[in-house]
Length: 262
Image (tube, rainbow, N blue to C red; front, side, top):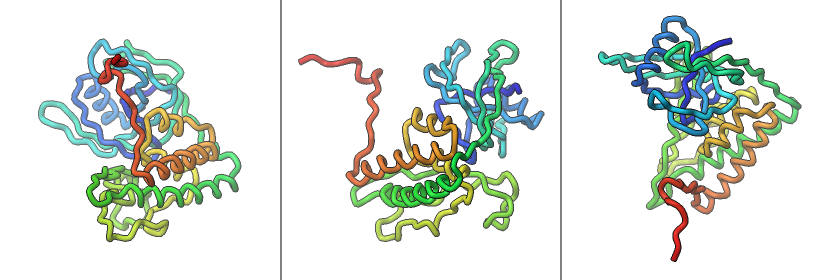
């Protein structure tokens, strides 16, 4: 199947909702096409290059996520604010840069293979325990500042939100990382936890704050079991770093400008 492609410096996981501000004319055309037809577009990670500019040369990841527009607001000058929900994965077969103002990709939808189902259930429970600890450690201590986990997820119709309509989104996931120290840390009962290990694996992949290549690796995992195993390793790493109040630092070579000599 062919879909419009929206390359970004982000990784969208199924079940996660991403806000987009659309200002370039080619992506305005993409938005109009999707709104008129009701078709999804594809969000895919830019490995190298920039998505802005007519002559941009991009290196794209091979796997992306279908994105369906859930909410759209249009400015008088033609710009859009969108909320788009990840609904599944695809593999890119080929990219056409000439037929439309935006990229069009021939893609194959990827099925979600669980692997060993009993093992997936056990891994899901283990991942949840680690995630609760991760949220607890993300809270700011005295004299510290911390990011709020402002992650949007799609509400399931018929869930706990009585007034939720299909396609509604929840503005924040499960917990505020800047909560006061005297508040009780979240527990498994405080979290809206999916029963399906695959759904859980995607949501945690989109929530845990890790480097883009690692998040892309989670998206590309061939089975739920493999994704949960990788998540557990990442959560163990993050808990270790947060326990010591450390975060990984990725040097930007454009800033460093090469090695210094004394």
